[in-house]
Length: 140
Image (cartoon, rainbow, N blue to C red):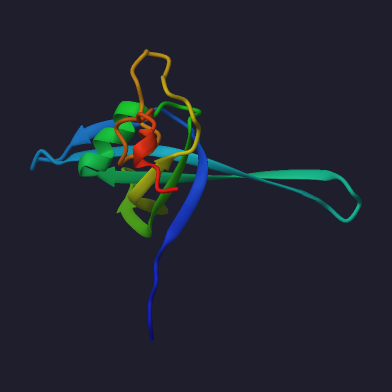
């Protein structure tokens, strides 16, 4: 049987990303993401539900999310769903699903955050305002 585990979400950060480092000095960032769903019920009443998901990223992705993202910022993430299990201090078994982020893209067109630092439009583009092409570079 074939298996496929891919998650794509767009939502808002529920808290500032928390950057830490593994003993191997690999950066790891954790944050929450919230998505909203609105609909009308049979009686025509407006309904809304919010889904909260914990997210984790490693390496350069973790550093970029930590550097450019703050609580409330919209973000599109791609990754895979993981299932964590552990034993709490009181001895009870605990578990939760988490998204392991493989790629992300900034959703808003904000070019500066509140600290004044310039943020790229997506994780692979460090120049959000490239120079327009010269007339002789246009192919038509």
